[in-house]
Length: 254
Image (cartoon, helix red, strand yellow):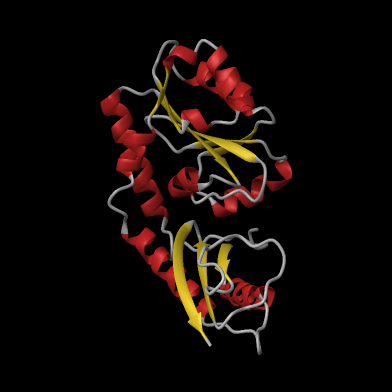
């Protein structure tokens, strides 16, 4: 799970970098005659919206609307209580309360773009049905097109800020893998030492897969329960820092 504070360092992620990313998307939109682009974000899939705005949700979900001009607008299925925090950690034109994202998106499109205009959606096939159904059933349904492929190409090559964050995340992961619980005998002790080091260094999320005894089973897996550590063991650590994910695998011999 995510740690308890996600902040925004504009030294690590400058406003100019976020605005340049949005400008690249808007240039593509004008070229492809897209009147709007919708991007869904949730705890499980924050990447696309985070890349454009620096916003990563702790819980719930939101829908980002990008028009060919101006800053993106976030339709957030969150109470207004957290709107000040969202504005502190993200570069947005506005944050609007939207308990029902699909209906809110239909209303926003109807109000802000011409009827019959084309609308791009990043991850159209992966939208939660509660969000997708109102959109697909509305007059906008036939105008929706999945632009996941073009959007992925738009993100390449990675810019300097993204690479810097990835290096920071990689260093955190490598440092965490050096952590050792004193006389670790079980997988929970080893995993706990790694988790503690990564969290204290500022990691926002981490996932561990482990092979506690390579002599018994070399398959890396999410463990349920506690297991004795063999003389040869391996671990895979996936770690996120400010939206940058890295994955490092290491074998230990004792």
